Length: 167
Length: 167
DNA sequence: TAAGATTGATAAATCAATCTTA
DNA sequence: TAAGATTGATTTATCAATCTTA
Image (cartoon, rainbow over all chains, first blue to last red; front, side, top):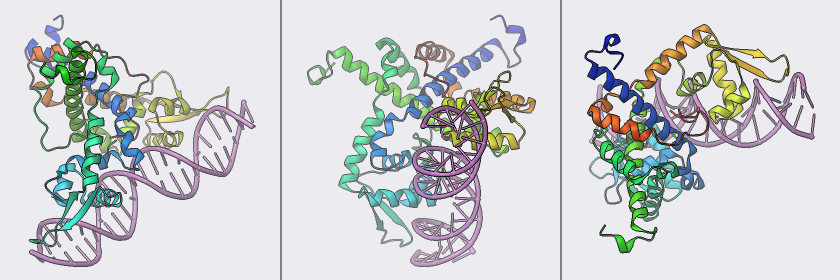
């Protein structure tokens, strides 16, 4: 409020809002990224010699609907060659299988196996476990956070685990 | 409330709190990671042919206090050899310089140059700019988010940009 | 020709030697 | 011997051919 005359972003409200948004972004990014870096979420994957990219690949597969590799690359926001590599590893472990598409023989689709669907479920459940640090907040704070975070716009696509490469 | 008798996490309060925390974690992680993946924050770095790891390295340097490479590896939670590589690139661009420590000639410290300090400031400022999506929330929501996020415990160390490698 | 998947080349990370100084 | 930095080997990503089918 004391900076009213220093603002050049427009009226006081706008300046203040941007500042608060900056604080929120810094706090949220710091917390999330330092938690992700701890990597507890990826234990199960590492046991299998897989990377966070493989989790992302599993996450965008649907047990009932084999998905073309090209569509996976789009969903993962990564290069087609990376999908080749990811699917190679997943196939070696018996989590997915490639199928040829009868209607267009250029296309290969990727289908989850039963093992793959089970592993996918376990690893996603583990991923979604809230970090201990969050539980140090009281119930009312958590409710409030949920309420406001729910208002954020959806990011387009299904890229919430970061690039296939990111960890 | 309808699940009271299914809970095995203890009293209803505990079960409910963990569930809410899970929602918060999912919402927060999804938002943060999809924003980071867009990579707008790293434009300035890419122009210089540098990676998010280099930003992290710059971020933990202090213009007034050269830092031993070993201490950087600790701060960055990465291998010493990665620090060698990061500092090589930063030195090529004139952003830092290696110095030998007179009191222990095994140690090399890394000092920001004037150019490095200026670049560090620009790039951090850019990084801290809140994403547009956050500004779609109203001022009251943002204030509430800030208030509650501020209660989160500090992550130990200064690793908030993720591993030196992560993007 | 172009679309879709793969292979090969390079970049950026981790892990295991190596080399210098304490 | 051990600590600190570097170099080399391997893994995981990106970018540029290549190979097959439409």
